[in-house]
Image (cartoon, rainbow, N blue to C red; front, side, top):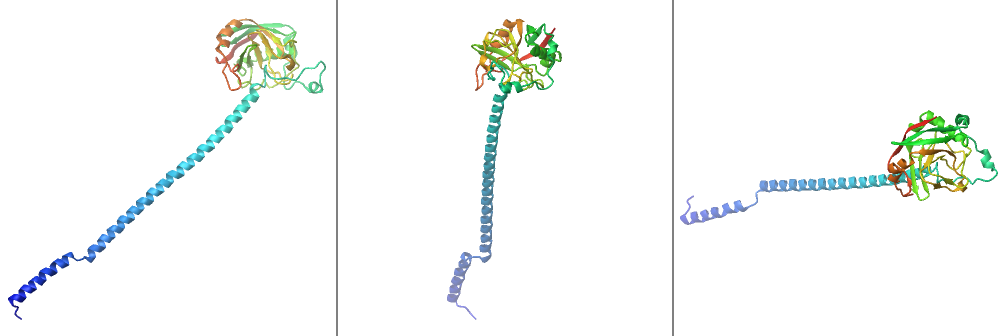
Length: 298
């Protein structure tokens, strides 16, 4: 079939118009690829969002757990501190001056008659009813001492026995208490734990050589105790100035005195002061740690 020139021109125009139409039209395969890529991108972003969310949740859960743990630790710490404070207050003043004691009446009460020595109390005959002399070193301060086995045979015997067994220079060496009140100046030593609790495994009485006026002159060596007159053991105190203790508490057994060296003790130890606490600023542990470094009796 022959095509005229005019028909050829019209066919050429039709072909020219069809080609651009195919180029501009949608390609099914290209559309599917684009859709697949979009889906992968959306899925990846969704995974990223989930991962970030889970990370935030993990951090939040960890923070909550830590807060709970910190709260528990804080509560336990408060309970422990309160318990230790209570324990310290109970035992800090269980022996020594300053503790109330039963009122002493002219005739023994039923409770007093029931009191007795407990444990292996050294025999009161050890003191032999005589005076003893010796030296007592607190840190580097050397004190001369005299013990009265005639007026306080039981307390003196206990002190001599413990001294010869080296109790005061080992287990009971720490002087845990110092006071510097206006009329209440002493140092206390001889506890088992070095903090004021415990004795040497026994307790004894009765009280001996107690001043009726409650005055303990500078240099007095006396037995510390708790409420009972039969709670004396290894703890003792030394006054470094005239000290007034209430006579209504029953008093304390005086069994010796410092004969020399007291001024050195005052300047080198007592003047260092007391470690203040919530309970007192004049009664506590010595600022200068103090121990019995030497003790001899003869």
